[in-house]
Amino acid sequence: MRRLKLKFPSDGGMARRAGHGLMLLGVTFFAGVSYQFTATMGEVAYWDLRIASMDRRVQREMKPQILTGHRGREIRQEVKKANAVMSEIDLPWEALFDSVEYAAGHDVALLSLQPDAVARTMRIGGVARNIPAMLDFVGALEREPALQDAYLLKYEVKRDDPQRPVMFSLTASWA
Image 1 (cartoon, helix red, strand yellow):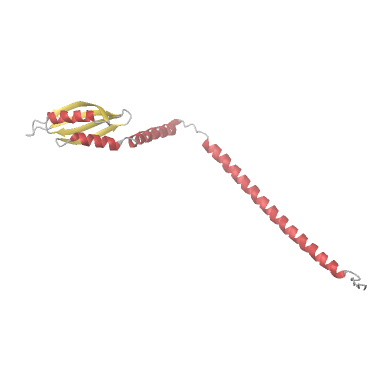
Image 2 (tube, rainbow, N blue to C red; image 1 turned 135 degrees about the horizontal axis):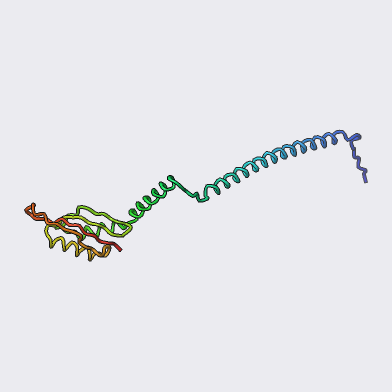
């Protein structure tokens, strides 16, 4: 068998320099990662404080404020008016108009419709060709499924007109 001849560097200077270079590279990389970590943690802390501040502000704003004096009275009146408008918007307009138009016929002309959302009634003003046409209209309203309790409030025969039309006012409630 032959003998192996291995040569080792005598002083190991080259390996030592490579080790020192790698260690310097590792320390530099560690310093960069540490700096990045510190900067990120600072940003996280900043945003945590901002979120906590916003949460406190929202909590403060959500607490019911007791309004007193003139300003509070104005706001309550505005809210009451807004609620009245909303209740009128929520009326079954299509069913009411269809019922009134269907009942009107050719001998009746409608002049006004005044709904009262709170009382759930409608005041209707119109002109009929004659008294029987007016009474037929009231009866037809009573038979409509959307309306009930149709009552004649007043009527007046126009004697100065040769055709003698009848002006009337009635009320009806809806279900």
